[in-house]
Image (cartoon, rainbow, N blue to C red):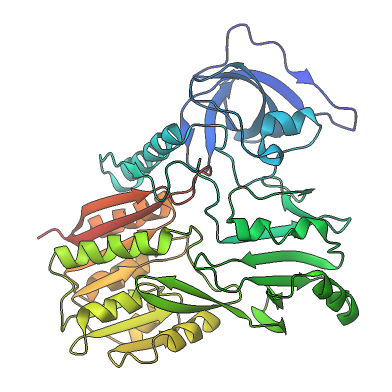
Length: 455
């Protein structure tokens, strides 16, 4: 949609240097990434905190004259969508934050939209990516997960925080180095908020990671010290933290985790199994995600006859073994599971989690290298790559192993659709697809697709 015919001239606001520009625009469709498309004098503007059909005043946050497109936040709603609701989080609310002279924190960019409309918008994004990148016309419902009466709050078992220059817990504004102090994290489990990390002086810490397992087991706080932080300062911070919480320091660049108190891992539960997950090791962050995804994956493979006792299967990008354990249950002692994970620490977790399963072979290494070195065939595969997806080379290798089916778990519809296009080029097709709203009030979603040879 184009900007309104009565759009005023760009409004200059602020009192420092080159002031930001405000415009009035009509909001068009959602785009991948949590933005909405608007236009001004032919230029595309990606607007956050809007809803299609609204007329809004926006503040440009990235607007070079030579830029192909601009970015902006909504600062005033002139004509509201019926799906607009009050934002649940003061620091993430664009309207309130900009009225106080600061940008909103990231991480809850759809919190102003009803949950039903959020899911419809995510379904639009998924359909658009599948059409554009895979040539596939397919509408897929984005399914609600967990309690429908919780407003999409209290689901995060993990949270990542920055620290303000004054040593207070904070979060970054979107696409910004600015760290804003926070006093709550409404998307997180109560256990995260009960730590009250925002009351502490965290001077000397660059980043804080928190893991609070949904099963109620011992939480873990990871502290990433700045290079100049002394051991004395680190232990001063440690003394402020609750005594029943494990604490470790970590170096994000090296992936090193050092015990300060308690243990350097957390105990997670899913699908009837217990999992040890070390430090920053990957684990699904929604409290109901592990069981939801395991049910979807094993349901697709079992119902299609691809996961039976004696079958040979592989779990690629396997993490700590979330899918490996139920796959091992399904194929039994007469079957085999190859579990491949690139991160050394997470691969060690998988070895500990599955040490009693003789039918499981755990290999640490890049998926493409392992498949190249260990040429074999499989009855079925589970593929759960990082946000960037598997990529063309890996997809070709997967097809070459001759599986009867692949269950592809994805947290990014663009990389999933791109990879699906590679499968189509190789003579495979999407048999079934489910989408889950595992990140309410954000633009993210999770999909599980069943991909099979076309003939």
